[in-house]
Length: 134
Image (cartoon, rainbow, N blue to C red):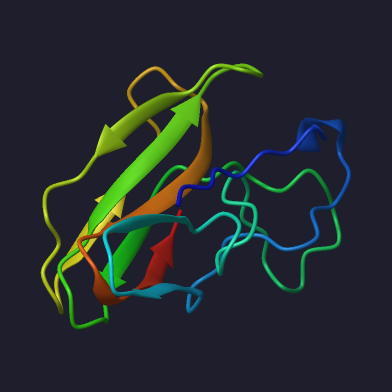
C-alpha cells in the first residue's frame, strides 16, 4: 500500500488554504505489515503552507521545516517529498526514528515546496506528531 498526496491547485494565487500543517497534528498507521502512509493525506493536511489560525490574509507562508516526534511504539522512517515546480518530485529518506525521538524534515536543498511527508513503518503501530513548524 502506498499513497502520495497530489494537489492540482496552486496556493501561490492567494487563495487561503483549507487545512494546513499545524503543531499538534498527528499522522498514524496501524498495520501488521510493512507499509507507507502519506501524512499529507492522513493527518497533516497540505504540508506546503502553514497559516496561523487567526490569519485572514493570503498567501500563507511556505513550510520551511517541520519537527516531528515519534509518539508511537515502533521505529519509523520519514520520507520527505519536495520539488520546485509542478510535476517535479524529490524524495529524501530519514534515518530510523525511534519511539520518543524527534527529527526535523525540510524540502531538499534547492527545492521550494514541501509536498508530502510519508511515514514508512516495518509494521505495527506507528505515530508521529508535529511539534514545530516554520
